[in-house]
Length: 420
Ligand code: EPU
Image 1 (cartoon, rainbow, N blue to C red):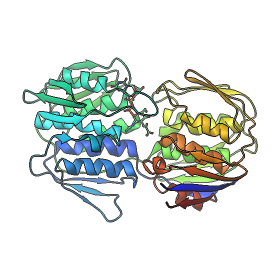
Image 2: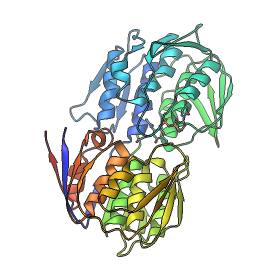
Image 3: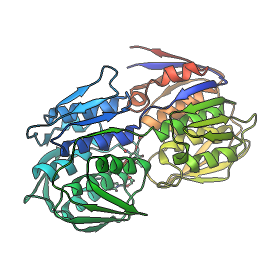
Image 4: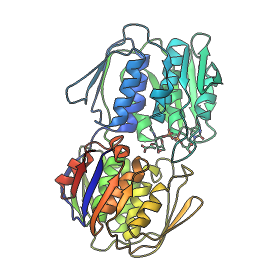
């Protein structure tokens, strides 16, 4: 298992180009199962979760040609696909559940392994199943599998999600595309990645429209050929914005629409960052002294992203006062706290709230990655620690950050991958 060695403290400057969004690419790739005609998906990030989804689609029989740089996938499924997704494929990535909606919608049956628990929370899939059931899917859970079928085409209906959920909204939208009649989904999550998915489907002739948190999908018979470029990754962009704020940085962040992280940029300004935006670019300068913010709460979009919570916590450790973060999306997303404490952070956790004492002088140490976003917070903290840190199990980072060590090295971080 590879490790990172990071020598701090760093002061960062230069330019970072943002890659395609992982959490947009995953549902878009899953949705290609609905197509018989050729589809081209561009701007895929070169991260492990995308390889996992491609392998899953190929295991279903999907014909995918990847460009040499793996950023473009040409997919043309002329024949019927398989509908079985095994445990060995699904267990490595919860996003695999996104193939259920398209398979049931197109092939009227599917057997998919139930995704297991996850370090950041139980992450059940009840809302995916409930919503697909309302569209006409029936299912049983047996031996760790969802065995699902439908009597022919799914049927459009009105569904109100009891809770905002990104994945269940995506699965339902994809499934409803080829359903008979009109589906109205109410109380939908409206994360930009979901809008990217619906833009993609509409580019192929789907009839999807939005009013606030209501999504209307008029079923069609077949999707047309299309070429689509995935949006840039807002969590990667947000992570680099935090890095600049943290390390007295001076960064130009390009290839990215700044509007979609307005909320987080507002927070970073309160921490003292100076930010200017220009079309597809963010210019951000970190302060000499990081100001503190009393209370931050993660919330569904357009609230503060849970996927940026651990990174923001590192900023709070370095801020000049005490603050708290309330994690409202996942019940166990403070895995990074114990590791940040090993670098010297003073953080108390009570239920879903962390109290961070600020003014931390981080000292390098050996650390363990747990999940994707927890791991990147350790990289940020190591970057501003005095001395050397070793971060173990960085395969978590490789799941969702493209070439992170190259991007960081380019802007002045002393980071090395130790291959093992
Ligand atoms: N939930 C249920 N039942 C369900 C679905 C969700 O109880 O059927 C709960 C979850 O356990 C969680 C909350 O509802 O507590 C929200 O979950 P949601 O469905 O919105 O999340 P997701 O679709 O599983 C996606 C991203 C996550 C991101 C969340 C929230 C992908 C592949 N994953 O997960 O990304 O944190 O939305 O924005 O898009 C990451 O990239 O590191 C990551 C974890």
